[in-house]
View 1 (tube, helix red, strand yellow):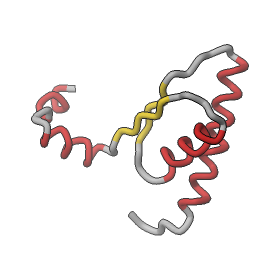
View 2 (view 1 turned 45 degrees about the horizontal axis):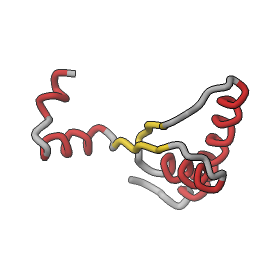
View 3 (view 1 turned 60 degrees about the vertical axis):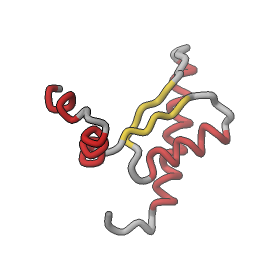
View 4 (view 1 turned 90 degrees about the horizontal axis):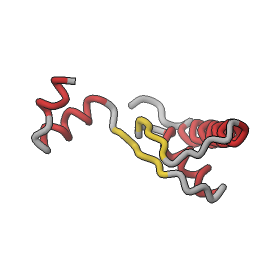
Length: 85
């Protein structure tokens, strides 16, 4: 995984990204119901902190990075489905 000493600062960057995303959505009159993202490192945690603090009811859906995704799919018997896609 490498040096994780900066993950807190990285999460703060995603807090700012969430604020920017919400501002842009408001300017465009868009309603966001869900945000799908890779759930590794600071991405999901930063967005979750921002949405919780701002009391925004957007559902976050974290998807594991590909190696984990294939392992989960195999466990569930869905690995052939992923190979076709």
